[in-house]
Image 1: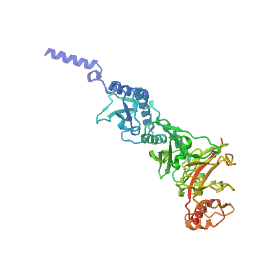
Image 2: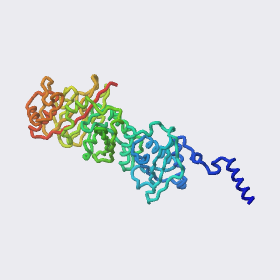
Image 3: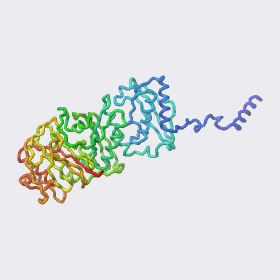
Image 4: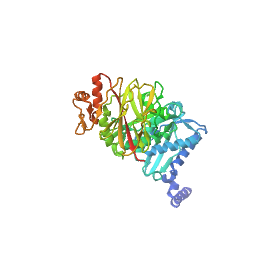
Length: 477
């Protein structure tokens, strides 16, 4: 009995003199592992655990960059991209390699996620075997204070959306080797013009794709002077001409379409035959875009050139810089490339937002010869005695080509003649067949009536008309 009392007394004494955590064990706050100072430090620790768990042997890994999220949240935030970059860097440094496209070619697929709580970000990493259904989570606890990260890295923003769009393209292209890509300017989907938003999106897509090891991006070419016709592969499509001139083996095209509250943006990576190698699509909240999606001057040009209703497919015009919208600076020489898919006569006009129209090709007195498929023609040609130099006043123009398998007549353009295609500044959409038939009987027309005149004239001759338009913007240096 005395021993028991002494033992109880000692226990009671210890419970009074020692801190509480010595009796109950280590407290939760003290048991939490230390926080990492940087995301790079955390990624290095993760790579170290993975390496030690596999006896230091290098494996081929697949990381789904698009699936890094907080719980079920599918928002595109910069932190996901930051984490993916650091994991890839750390694991490559540790001796691993990454399979970019085909998960079946990897030994393990990495699944990363994160959780925020009380200013702490905890990152979880799981390794899934691609050979069987086994998986394992990292044993370590990987935490970093949120104030150690950029303040806006958990805010869904435009850059993250565009970055995820580029990731979709990178994942979709499942061929080995590095692809040389020409990036055409992003344009409005219906009328094919550029805007401040599309210029920004084009730059961001280039940067994001350049950051991957799978693409080599060709920058905009400087303006070229007149050149001789160039032959291309017979199976190359008209859309591939720009990439051929740039020395690329693929072309990236992007377009956006405005909705009520969102902007749908899509991109396609195509080879020279027009086959889609990869594509991607994102819906971007309109409030997330701080740039204008409109281009008033180009909208006016699109109305006059009627790009929304073009009868396209057999002819294509572009600038020598590539794409359907390009910027030229003061002093540069502007040239255009023309392609046809069958022998066609071509007629090229310059249109400015004031409705002023001038014939660029063929010049008066020049012999008319049909253009042949399989050749990229440059306008003006080497043999031409004229060229187009950028000089004031600067602005935007639409350059439109009409093509037919028969020679077409030329209208006389005069702004002294009243427009019949436009009433109160808008294109007439009623009784168009009669309007075009009437216009085709006029020798003199207003410049705004050019498209309807050609459509009426070709219909009267019983030939099919083909069209294509390119936008050009000139700026001061």
